[in-house]
Image (cartoon, rainbow, N blue to C red):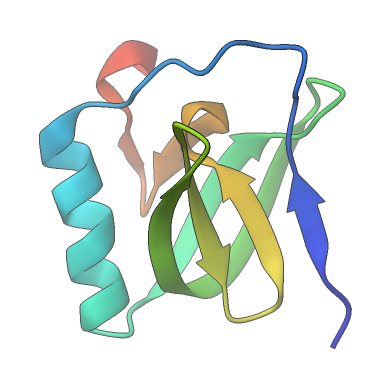
Amino acid sequence: MESYFMDTPDKSYQPIDCNYYDRLEAWATMRTICQIVFRDETGIEQEVSARIVDVYALNKVEYMRMDNGLVIRLDSLISVNNIPLPDHC
């Protein structure tokens, strides 16, 4: 399986809402197939359907890894399962 890593190292990380982080962890635990809308490293809006397999922090940046190999920075998320991040309301 091919692995993709969506990161923007030149952009400082903006932590997401704690309640939303908890919701991502719950979807991962329940193995829910999620509709995920995010901005890729070029700023273009992308949409993917996948299961969240891990939500983690690395070097003070939070990520989620999907069952298709995609890794997304949490501050690039727009919505998951039609629920927008609080910053994107």
